[in-house]
Image (cartoon, rainbow, N blue to C red; front, side, top):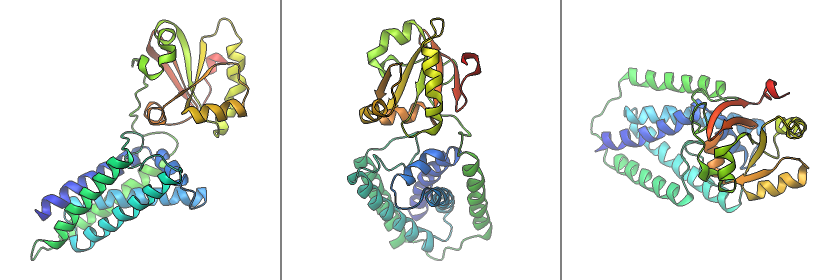
Length: 283
């Protein structure tokens, strides 16, 4: 029972940590949204937690020093559950950020899963394997995992090492993502641009997008932001010539990993995509 319990919880921790390792920026932003630390310190703490989560995950799976790792894991679950509840109530975050942009858990789902994980870990703590000894090589694997997660998560801040986005070249645009323009997007050629009000690079793109929008031969431009409130902020901050629409924040996070992002689509199929750098062919 103890081996199975730590293995299952460890697998969840490792999966969560690996997702954040391959693209750490969403989790860094999530930590910064709590506004408990400076942006730089928040970034460092986010990377540190990713390392801990990956190391803890592989350690639990291999049952490394369970007398220490199990109570430490329970403490982390309690800490981050408390932070999530506080963050949501204070409207600083909308979810736990456990699985980055890949899987979004609602607050009730997060609380229930954390309660279940803590219960399983408590059982393994109260009913340990008698006379169990941790082999030294397992500790080595745990240390190597922490090191690798550190290197990969730092290298994935700017762009994902593995792209899990729904928007890739050759993929279809789902008309239900933006019902207001269902016919236009599936029947015409257009540039779909994902933007954020506080994004400095997005601000640099706006004059270029306005110029492109005024050119008759250019594709139509459709701006997309995250949530109705973001649309209101965007309208107040910028007077753009192209239309801007809102989609749900959780969907926004699944569609793009960074802003600005622009996709050329024709008849509902993604033809090409650009990130951070404005497409030269439209300058």
